[in-house]
Length: 199
Image (cartoon, rainbow, N blue to C red; front, side, top):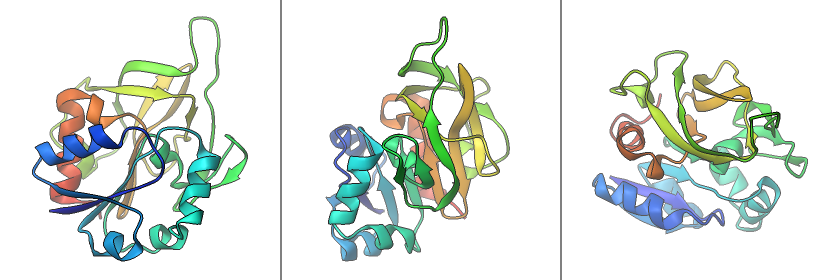
């Protein structure tokens, strides 16, 4: 399985790459359009802020490449947020593959932002990404912004407010948490993406 891991300037590349390699994937870290188009699966990782990440993708000429991909695409953490129309973080237009605007999590008494740590996934509708996950499955989150729970949300999570934890629309999917840091649950979701893709 040839997997293109897009160079979006994130700092979690090594751990994502190792998690995929453990599942038997042949991973290439790249910002080359032809390499990305030739891959069987494409992953858009990301740690940092929306505006700099979009600027890096634009400078590399990858915006249209990602928008017109015909292969299954998985966004991770910030990479998932970039799949949406826009982000409140830096008030930036994003890839527009999924409808909605990413907004900042609401801080309140007992609810700290950023959201850091383990939290329970709340399944909303069936998805190949969730196949085989146990009831009450938890994943590891580190983020301050989140996508809305819309029609493309297949699993939600709650931290002060309810937000999209896993999304899927056709070949486009995303995980707000870090699957590479989410033990067996994260490995299962990555494996589901590699084996079944999304459709």
